Image (tube, rainbow, N blue to C red; front, top):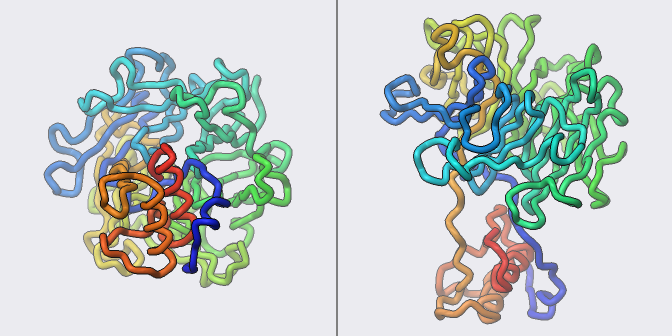
Length: 437
């Protein structure tokens, strides 16, 4: 919205941190892939532009059990997510832990001293965090992590809300973790896997045991810090027989949700885009479901096993992994080269990593996520007078209200795609000493 804002109006605005879910423009072409056969997370980079990461130096170990400090389990990494600041979050099912990784020394891995932080774990919190299935990022630095609860000892299906309030690099201190969604109570037969966030809405895949698979959408409308029954809605169900057979992976681009079929009962797996055209909050019309890719389009000589995970990358790019027999373990990158909204055309499917046999990556590809280039620090000196003060706030208020902009600033200060009062609030936070949005 646009409107006239005054300094008096600014006084009533809240000051808060403005870290948001990762905008798609921040994703780069780095690809992180976990291999549960080799107990390793790999970083894949197409350095020579030939469409794959099969050449010397293009694929390297990013994280494994040789890490200098923490990671000592067998390394069954079931989920990967990359935050807006570039940290790589991995959820490991053998240690029942969520790690935050950063390549501090720039050598291409996170295996050195100080590069891995135990962010959240059963052992440190005494919470029921077993078999982590998904990770996603919300506003104000919030990390969501799901647990499928499989096993004889721990059985709860939860989505946790994690927030590093004391800035010590983890979320295992008092008041930093809470059960955001108690799926064991809200969903009969819950079996939660991947998560994806869009603004204040969290999407989650729930295969629900023997029942129809569902994608749920959760939004904390009353700001209570938990999702109750009225705030968890069914976004899409395979019971509607509209095409998609929900797998374990999910990706979100704004309000569009992407899923890939992942079941042996579907002979040709497909990627689908789900778009709520009528604003009902449900995918319940044939027009709201679009096939955007088919397994039939894989390059010659490449076969897929079960498509385990899907990741939305830079604009017009999607990645997916499959696992099965040796030759079915592959990492694909789909690129919408003609900008027609799908990946169905010639040359739009590339095999980034191919199955090379037992003991060689990709031996059992499981999770995939694209790298993130952190945004450059913001410049709060909007009037360019060399000082960061109230005059800069007044300058932004004037521009947001439709006034002149002699220094040519971008008034969308918080980068959310809208020019409105939220930009002024974010700028006040930075002027007061807070971090950039």
